[in-house]
Image (cartoon, rainbow, N blue to C red; front, side, top):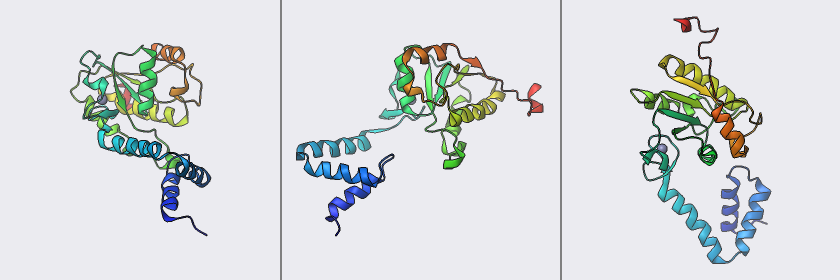
Amino acid sequence: MLYALPVQELIDELGRLPGIGPRSAQRIAFHLLRVDEVDARRLSAAIVALKERVGFCEICWNIAEGTRCETCADERRDGSIICVVEEPKDVIALERTGEFRGRYHVLQGAINPIDGIGPDQLRVKELLERLQNSEVEEVVLCTNPNLEGEATAMYLARLLGPLGLRVTRIASGLPVGGDLEYADELTLGRALEGRREVGTRQASDPQGDA
Ligand SMILES: [Zn+2]
């Protein structure tokens, strides 16, 4: 026996969401079937509003209502320093520390060969374009302290090295293998303060010591 079509369609759609398996999809669908119509409508309206009103910032690729995010629209932010992060949630985490007054660049992911994510799937090209003829003096690599985040930071350090900018990486002290968003404000604030210059002139790059 099959479920009524609208139920099955909802289960299928929910099952496409990250972290939701078939059993969870079924449980959520039956939950929605039971809730008041006004609650279900509020959820569907929130999804529609999200798609209609929110997109990505044309400068830093953070979430934005309109063409620019709050940080990029804020004239008081320091344009000489850019913090490169993986996801919009990392911007929130760094803003919570109150330690950073510069601007951001959101890669929208990290290098992960297993999932087929390379630099071309990330906002790397956009970062390079942004750094052309800009007032940026320092790029802080604030990717997560896990395998993918470190690989991404190393890749960017090598890529940005020849541009003559100061390239730094947030200090260790963050839980290794963790996510920036789970670090408390104090730890993250200290990691930012204790950032170190990244050795962009690799031993494997003989042209680098010119
Ligand atoms: Zn922005």
